[in-house]
Length: 629
Image (tube, rainbow, N blue to C red):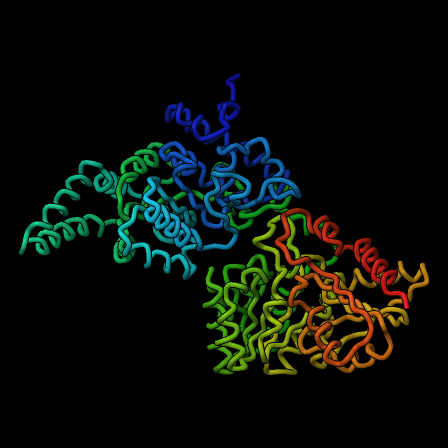
């Protein structure tokens, strides 16, 4: 039996000793190891399978970690982790205390820049390259970005700025969806070899330098040189787009061909101006199901490698995402003036059924959250009622658009913030902990949070029928707790809270996902003769001032519970109102502490920060014991 090459590979220096044939064998072993591991742990699979040859070639040609590799998002980064000292820990990826699912400089010196949101790599790489030049240091900088991330405006801002700099910077566009070029032909491969050849580039540079001394011929000669090069590249579109940004464009080439990748990288490595290398890879390569359905296998749940049945299919109660998908389809059938908009999150937000049923009223803006928000504002200005479904963490990127384009003009855009609170294994870059805090300061904006799927329906219909303000609805990545798919919507007066149970000792004001937990807490505390009143604070802004005025008189102890950061959160709003109204009692805020929370199982993370039932009980007992009157 042939001994596994991978057993001998721990760091990039180890692969530099291998032949190209051995590197090809290593690529197969890395794929097999990644598939068997991610099937057990869950994680991002299809993207990383397509980038194995790219990863090996980069570490083979470049001197990492001295040379800097900046991976966009990090979905493609598992092979990178395997080759940079973390092979034996891959089975801990995205688990509490284990490897991060994305790139993280605190985890490894080989991770040159952290990322979990898309389109940041080019700007970050340009910043690193500029710092290198300011400090007069000598190393190479490479940004690796997928074609999906290239839909983000930030990527083009980075290209625009970097292209004019004339600094050494290589951007590798990993086109794994065939969305930019339909094929990789022999002619294109040949032309790429021609224009990346060191002899050609030395000749080009010499001509460029020589023309500097020509008083009249400089412009003419350089124009001729450009024309010759453009004639070659016209056969290789879309290179002209990147040329216009100031990048020398090469490609597209087969990114899964080890020989071509190594040869090309070696040829362009020493070009000291901005370069864009366009490679085409097969997303999910090496795994038949992932190749045929890369969308489903972009990210997989544990034990989801050999079939496409998601673990959520085993859950009897629909998730908030499933409930949302059904509700917007109901709305779509009854309201022709409604549309749904998302930013490359159709599957994750539950909008696939809506997109199929109403293709003319569904809009995917790509990874461009700011555009999605302003686009929705334009539609709202003309009488359409847009429902914008975006993950909480990604809406942060559109903050100014919410303020300037929606709230300032008081336009009736409905924002549905999926994955509000802790999301689990994706970790700090993806937790939706900040949305309450960053939204509460925005005038005109109504902010709400349903306790279950039925209330999600009620809030969506309320947003459509009872107000023309911008309206935000936040909900967790979790079970919807209770959802009747055939239920009827009930409109809720804006700002009205719901009394879940009546009590006399302490009021627990709970938001969204914390209502069910707070009810369980109250039941447990009742056995200890502590009577809790639990309020479903389904409106975060405006608050139910009528209830607060009554609570001010009834309780000298009030507790707020939210799955959001405490600084500036719902509890801060309640505390401010009580202070303004001369409340003489004590208030306790329970929520996410003001720090970035790591990755791991959501229930485990809630326990870690005392937002599970036992943690909240402990917090309440301590609060009551310290404030006995």
